[in-house]
Length: 288
Image (spheres, rainbow, N blue to C red):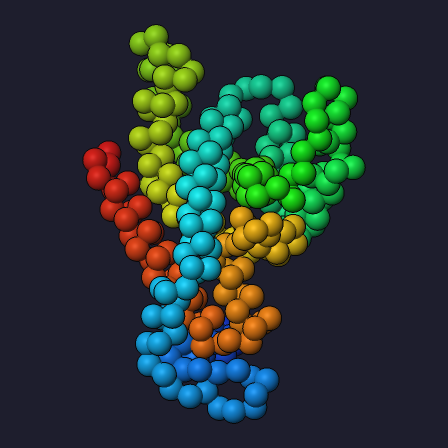
C-alpha cells in the first residue's frame, strides 16, 4: 500500500512541480505585484502601495475603453459562434454526400495557429487583398477594413467566428450523436421537420454541452489577444483595444508591472462572475 502511494507521488511529481513553478507561483506573485509599484527597468524592488493600482484602473478611461471593446467582442461572437456551430453539427449528423470531408474541413482552422490565421486575414483585408478585389469586381468601393475604426473590430470578430466554429461543431456533434435515434424517429413519425426536431428535441437534450461551449467560449473571448496583436495592435483610435492587449501594453511596453497585474486580476474577476452567471442561467429549467 505504501509502495503504491510512493509510486503515485513519483509519477505525479513532474506535473506537480510544473504546476507549482509555471502556474501557482506566477498567479500568487502577480497578485503580490498588483499591490505594488514595480518597474523592472529601474532596478528597485517592488514597493507596496495597497489597492492603488486597482483604483487607478477604475479611474483610467483607457481601461474602460478596453473593457467596452472586450464586451462588444464577447457579446458579438459568442451567440453567432454557438448558433452556427449547433446547426452545422446538426446538419453533419444527416446522411449528406461527403459528410466526412465536411467534418474534417470545418475542424481544420482549429488546428492552425491563430498567428497564421491572423496574418492570412490581415492580407485578405488589405487594400490589395482578395476581399477588396472582389468588391471592386462587383462594382463596390474598396474598404479599409483594419484601418477604419468602424470596421476594424467587426472584421476581427468575423475572422474569430470563422476560425473557432469548427471546434464547437465537433463538441456539439459528439453531444448530438449521443442522443438515441429512436427519439428522432418518433418525432419524424409525429410530423416534425428537420428544424423543429433540432430546436425542440436536440437543443434541450444537449443543454450540458451548450453550457460547456458557452462558458469556455466566453473565457476564450474575454482573453482575445493574438488576433489584436497581429492585426491592429489596439488601433485604429483604440477601436480594437481589448483588455488583455491593454494589460500587455502596460506590462511590456510601459513596464508598469503592478498596474498590469491589477488589470489582470480585475479581468479575472469579471470572467469569474460572467461564467457563474452563465452557469446559473443555463441551469434554470434544465431537463432531467
